[in-house]
Length: 483
Ligand code: SF4
Ligand code: SF4
Image: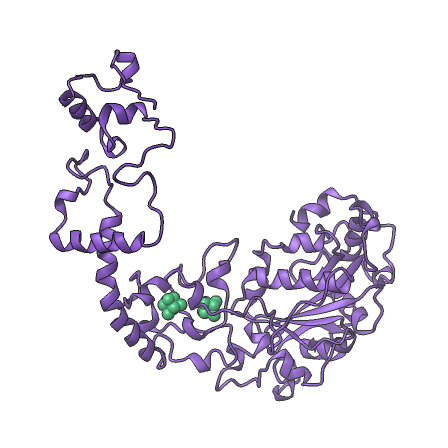
């Protein structure tokens, strides 16, 4: 349920101040007619959502979403997540999970200095619960600015001061102040994890990743290095799933999730794009797209999927739908360290893929024709040996001699040391000697005959009959034999 909806349905008592709420002495919130705050909403959720009975020491965890040099794509991606959704995290809807009190410049109820004051409280260690930092975008080297104004800022201080004395606060400065006290520091998206597009060659800002900014000795208050969830933009579910697992960990309801040597959630980045790609079958058969819009494997027009760690082909972009190759795009390695420079020029065949695609071509040229023969045979209905009941269907009369020979050996191999379905020829008898009425009427091949053929058999046996009636209904004498 969107938080905006909740704010209209949950009664908020504006006369009651939230613990440590600095807005008590602050001016009214411009445009916020309810005077409501995010912390107050979280407190109401905890009171009315049965959270008081929840297992674990934590009822809530604050999260501060800070933006550096970003396009906000990570925010959009996270908001599309469904497993779990941001709303589920914010409302503590999942068992064992504390309410996530999210401060995000677009989603939070407060705005302006009322919003910034919460960041300041976190930096000053004045919150009543642990907090995590979620950082989107890369961090610019603020020493490289010429006029003293930050490349990327979040709020201004002093709070509620006059414009002459106020200065913008670089998000880098907030990170520097907040990171030692944070329970966890999460870099979301490739700009925050490796530097990404703002850090590409020739940039004037000295942009870098959160890890590079905090240094190799950085550990959060819970002893964690920076957690990295790369992607440009990342799969939203990768982010919310990791946050959910961290919340369970912080609340002592689950072990620390497993991270790989680059600080990525290990289970999310273990496979390559290629392994789950919807076009992987084309690659395996050595068939490649020549231009955009073709349906085959895209490796020869620039796809890096075989060597890139990303689960979008397995998980989909949003709600299990979409993803780069599904939409016709090549993998440009957006989750990887060094992106974008290490994967340019985009749309040129990656050098290493020439070897493997040549191998796939050779292998495919042998395997493809054989598969087409098997495919043709698998598409033939066994009942249609002599008679095809539709203008569309393929009958056995259309097979060539070579197909029949291959099919003969294929069949032998298929059932080598295995049971064929049904009774084998010469037709096996039931132990009791029972003969089914249909077998008695039409012979042992009755189950691979079409109705017309059965009729012909019945006629030859001297028992002409009409289609659609059972032998019993028509008075056909069924020679049921019992031994
Ligand atoms: S399009 Fe890319 S990821 Fe998909 S099969 Fe081809 S090389 Fe692999
Ligand atoms: S498939 Fe490649 S380009 Fe697409 S999201 Fe994954 S890493 Fe990025």
